[in-house]
Length: 211
Image (tube, rainbow, N blue to C red; front, side, top):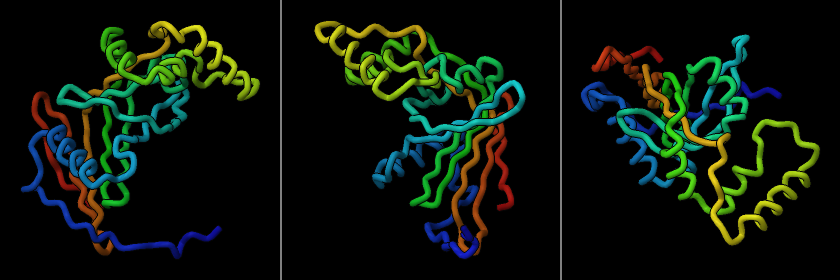
């Protein structure tokens, strides 16, 4: 399939150094609030990239559930491929593709598991069926059929219909501490604006990058 003729201009405006916050977490907060206000689809959805022991990268989409100046938090099954790879190599990259407003954010850093207490606090805030799904699914394991998974789910629904769903020890959160954050704003004639924040101790170095 030839896709070379597909193109469009990026006309949502530029990004200048004087309009950037000194801390990238503050800048991310500004952009996230704008994405939420504009009601773009799934603004918290991010692609996360990890790598195995051979350097083979893999990606998947997860949802950002919390962020502050300490880091970016997501939740997953600790037996999943991403978790196994993070056990071997904590380095991770996050990517937010806000295409409808011609923006991207890339975050590079290291991920570490959060405390069971923090994971439990979020787990109990989820709808009960989502809690049960987390117990039922051994993420990334080979399944004999979808019906097997559904049977597991229905069995657990009956088991916990009158009680609380316990937090499984194979499910919880990660916090990503950033060492680099890049903000990308699409520009006319492919002259995009890119600004990279690099952690320098307690401060951040900000550089404009060529598009």
